[in-house]
Amino acid sequence: MLEIEREAVLAEKPREECGVFGIYDLDGSDVASTIYYGLLALQHRGQESCGIAVSETQGPKGKVTSHKDMGLVSEGFTEERLQSMRGDIGVGHARYSTAGESTRENAQPLVLNYVKGTLALAHNGNLINALSLRHDLEYTGAIFQTTIDSEVIAYHIARERLRSGTVEEAVQRATRKMQGAYSLVVMSPRKLIGARDPYGFRPLCIGKRDNSYIIASETCALDTIGAEFVRDVYPGEVVTVTEDGELHSDMKNAIPEDQQGRCIFEYIYFARTDTRFDGISVYEARIKAGRFLAMDSPVEADLVVGVPESGNGAALGYAMESGIPYGMAFMKNSYVGRTFIRPKQSSREQSVKVKLNVIREAVEGKRIVMIDDSIVRGTTCSLIVSMLKEAGAKEVHVRISSPPFLWPCYFGTDIPVREQLLAYNHSIEEIRDIIGADTLGYLGIERLDAMAGGLPICRGCFSGEYPLAPPEEDIRGSYER
Image (cartoon, rainbow, N blue to C red):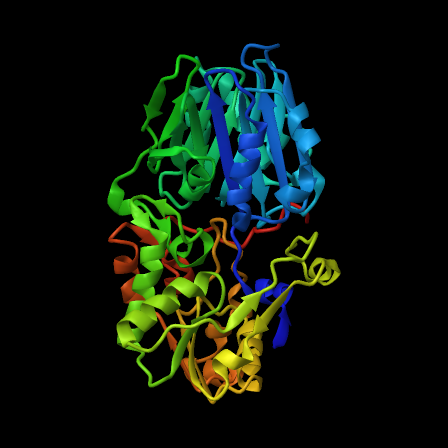
């Protein structure tokens, strides 16, 4: 079998910022272990750092026990560590950075002590006005300990709390200042709060297990801990779980549905295949994408294969629609020990190499349709095509279950500037030649609405048209400068 380093594959993929998880056990049981398992289910959303913060609602007010570490959730927490974290309310976070350096200080949740008590906050997304909000705070004396926009959010919540009757009102008032993408889970001494931006860029859902409420990025985290899905947090909504067991909703930040813009790449790549959000199954969305590719870009072939993991669903859909058999051509080595992925090339080269293998017996002498979710710079796709041909594939026909990337993303997706996007500088035929495929087809941009079940979506990285005006300059990563 031929081999490829998984780091090379991941270097090519767009990546999303974070996964968030919060729980309030109204019976008073410790929740740290449950948060740990929830974060394991959300590990695909961020492998750079992780953290958990818990508190005892009936204990000393404002006392928070927290732990943060670099790397995977399984690396950052031991059984002894979790047992020492006593508390019936807590939040957790798995991070990949799109703004702010990769350091322990920038790991979340953030714990903030202020005159009204303590807040712990976990954030998924990216604010396009974070720098201006940060400057406003700095010129009034704020001192920042991190370079992430999540600390800006925490500061504004704390300031709004001084003139708000409740912490949930402070969250609602603070988020009205924010422009961009955010799904938040906030822990106060006696309340668990979730907030989603008015456009609904990032998913956020509510679950219940016995007498516990959960707020998490994806439904797969609820399934992992045996919780029942209650509903999604609506775009623009602030939800609050109080100590009396009530779930309160504030929709003051909501906007008309036709102005919303969920990130279509959640369905294409980011979300786990078994997740549902806003009523749409990610699995079914990927099956649809594959079917559309088969309708719009048919080809005679012997086998349809997906590049693991996000290409598998679309590959199955392509096979269903085309009648070409679906098969497995790649094997991932799951027994790799300690490793974690960081966004900078120097760090990737230092991390433990994890291998993706081509199964020669599956592809030798066959015409292969290879389904992948995207092409960013083209280097990885080219390498995988050459691997298939070296393994004996007669032809390799590449089909991509998204349209060509032509524009960057400012809302929490690590899609680079236009000049680094292969499709910005090359035609489809030129890209086909660069990656060495026999044919190449992309998902048509007109297919995205049906793929997302008719929900309002953001397709800015494909069309340059965003739900709200992007910043005049690309400020991603500007904090460390």
